[in-house]
Image (cartoon, rainbow, N blue to C red; front, side):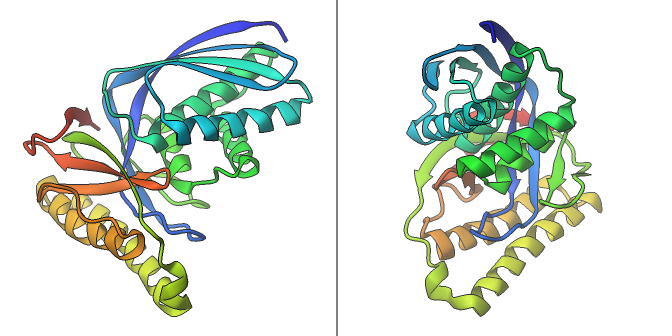
Length: 274
């Protein structure tokens, strides 16, 4: 495998509704930025041992660790150590961990396959990335939701094991705030019955919010309901106090919550999503 450089531009996927609960597969609503906000360059070449180098924006240790595990699995499957140099530039300062991992891992699969002379269809890239996630211990369904929305290029309702669906919502502007680590999970304290009820509540919340949007209810109204309900779930299960601002809510990220606010909160960078 010879060294090769690939340059790609990506929209930013963002899970706006849906709370991840360990061991469960619930639905998510994912939006994608109207503009391409993330530039990625990947240089892949043979090496004496698997190595990942990241330049550009700071990804945080959780994303870098996940990407290293991802690359290790790729090398194991190829039976060939590789060095992957990844350069990332973004149009926003605060990148959600789940979103940027979804983008970079997807681009790693594309770049490695193309450097090896293989051409994969988009769906094959998704399936390969998901399979590698599982072996790498990064099998988060909200990451798979982000990738599905990237492939479709529009607002997507995703639940693992089911076909992704169009959300058919108007474009919205949201402020991206940043991440906060979760506290102690209390799944073991809830017990099976309460945990099952919480899972159903979280799942039905997404279904209800999407249905309201499809029936023509305003985004502002639906957002307000989602803020109250999902912040309560994040507090109950993860111990995350609601973020600053009445119209701000937590969204999924790696062992943390990522804060997102309605336009006008003045707490983060404004991005238009579709």
